[in-house]
Amino acid sequence: MNNMNFRNRKGYALMALCLLLASLSAAASNVGKRYPSEKYTTVDRVTGRTLTVLTASEHSDAKPYQTHETWTADGEWIIFRSNRGGNGSQFFAVHETTGAIVQLTDNPSVNGGSINLSRKEMKLYYLRGGTNAGTAGGTEQPRQIMELHIGNLLKDAMADGVKAPESYERIVVTLPEDVRGSGMALDADETRLYLGVTPGRPEASRQSASRPAASRPASSADSSSRSSIDSRNTNVAETREEARARFEAAGKGRSGIRVIDVQSGKIDKVIDVDLRMGHLQANPWTPGEIIYCHETTGDAVQRIWAVRADGTGNRPLYVETPDEWVTHETASGPDEVMFNIMGHLPYLREKPTGIAVLNLRTGRMKLLGQIEEDMGEGRQGGFWHCNGSPDGRWATGDTFRGSIYLINRETGERTLLTTGHPMRPDHTHPVFSPDSRRILIQSGLFTGGKALHLMTVPVERD
Image (tube, rainbow, N blue to C red; front, side):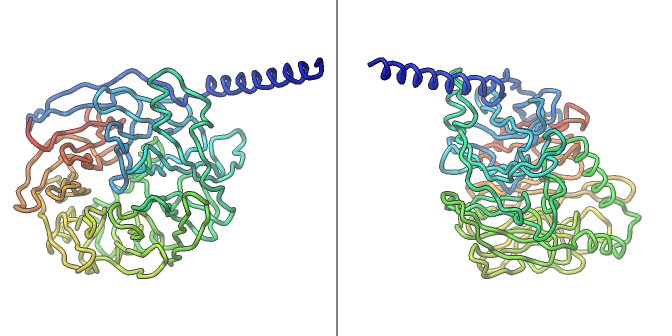
C-alpha cells in the first residue's frame, strides 16, 4: 500500500512537472499574444473611397504574395508577416471586423516567405529551420515543414487560454539535407505541398534564392534590394540589349519542384529545370496543376511555365515574343492565369501591353487594358501587378505610381479605387477577398514608404 502511494505521489509529481514546463513554455513564447486593435478608416483624398486600415504600427506588415491565400478558411482573419514581436519576421493574424491581432509563431527560424493557408480548414503550413536561422552562432536547425492549427490557437488566444506552442503544431516532414529551398504551395486538394528547391546549391539563408525579394516580407535589407532592382528595371538609359544580358545572367541556375504528402511526409520529385525558378504556385481550383516562372529579377525570354504534379506536361504558358516583358502571373480561375505585359519603358510600348488573361486549356489570350501614366524622365509607368476576383467579374491592378484600379472583365471599364501608395518598401500586391467585395493591399502611404500597413478598399462604392 505504501509503495502504491509512493508511485501515485511520484506520478502526480511528474504530471505537475509536465504541466509546469508546459506553462513555462507558453509563458516564454509570444505565440497567442494579443495586440490592441489598430483598425481605423480614412477616405482616399482623390477617389473618396473609404480605406479600412487594419495594421498601423511602427512596424512593417506584409501580406502573402498575391499567388497565395490571404484570408483564413472561415473568412474572418487575414494572415500577415511582421517584425513587431521582437523575434524577427513572424506570422500574425488580424480579425477583419474587430481589428484584433494575434501572434501565430515565435521562432527565429520561421521562413517568412512560406505562408500557405488552407482554404478548407483553419490551418497554416510553413517552413522553418536551416542555417542562419537567427540562433546563437548560426546553429543549424532541422529544416521542417510545419502544420499550424490556427483555428485552435486563435480560439484559445481570444479566450486567454493559450497552451504551449507545440500543442498547436505538427511536423509534416523533416527535410533531408539535399532538399533545400523555400518557395512552397498547397495543392487545391490540400493533400500535397509543392516545394521549390535548388538542387546541389547550399542554402545561403532561410530565404531561398528561388523566391524573389518581392514575395518576401519587407526587411531593411530586402527593401534596399527591392528598391535597387526597381531602379535598374525602370532605367530608360539602359538599352534593351543591355537589359537582356543582365536578365540572362540573373536567370541562370538549376531549380526543381518536390511534392510532399501532407499526411505521411513522403517526398517525391516533380521536375528539375535548368533555370532559376520563382513564384511557385498551385492552381487553387485545379488539383495537380503547378505554375512557376523563370525568375530573372525582371524580363525573361519565356517567363511563365506550368507542370503537372506527376512531372508530366511541363510547358511554357503564353509563348512571348522578344519585345514583351511578361511578369507577375497568378491563377485567376480554374482554367486561367492572369499576368502583366509591362509597358513602363518606351520600347515596350511599341507593342500591346497591360493586364492579360490566358486560358490554360485553349491557349487563348485576352488583354484587359493598360493605362497611360507619365512617370517623368521618359518613363511610362502602367500596370505592375494583378489579381482576379474569385467570382470572375473583376480584375485589379496596381501601377508604378501606386494607384489601384478595378477592371470590369466583361466591359473593360477601369475605375480608380485609391492612389498615392508608394511602391516601397515593397509593392502593394493587391488581392481580392474571398467574397470578391474588397481588395487588400500593403501600403506605405502613411509612412512615406518606410513601412507597410495593411488596408482594404471596397470594390463597390460605399
